[in-house]
Figure 1 (cartoon, rainbow, N blue to C red):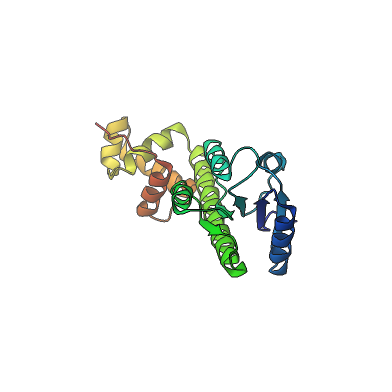
Figure 2: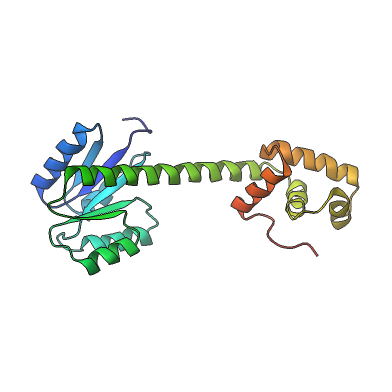
Length: 209
């Protein structure tokens, strides 16, 4: 298994259901890791891969909805698809409001589940891409000197070199040199690019007096 493989986790205490879902997912080239309980799921080392969780609502001990809340509290961002043979509208509303991707009542069509899984995996891929991109931006920001960060914080507020120089007590030419280094290190082609990066990083939000 490579780090780029998608994984579908299934938590259902019914062995037959897990076996049936495993066969369905393998038939479309997806990898499944099944668990009989939330505790068993949490005991697994999660792979560094796009993933989603197919979760039964009714489980021994804590319900699937309670486990959903536990995952959210632990900042586990895996997309969840609920399956149940005993669902009702209030239950599905609670699950969806808490962030579930889909709520399917048994018996459901295989294609409905597969469509929900593909949507959940696409959501997780997008989240992971955003997190990698933000991590890269943080690394670039960390490469700046403290003086360069000071200049960048004022620059992204729309101030010109002369104003920046006056604010930090240096010359325009020195600010220009810092600005060039900032653009290079942040890999920003334009000032607009740099401003967008600062926005994503929530950097330079404090106004300059």
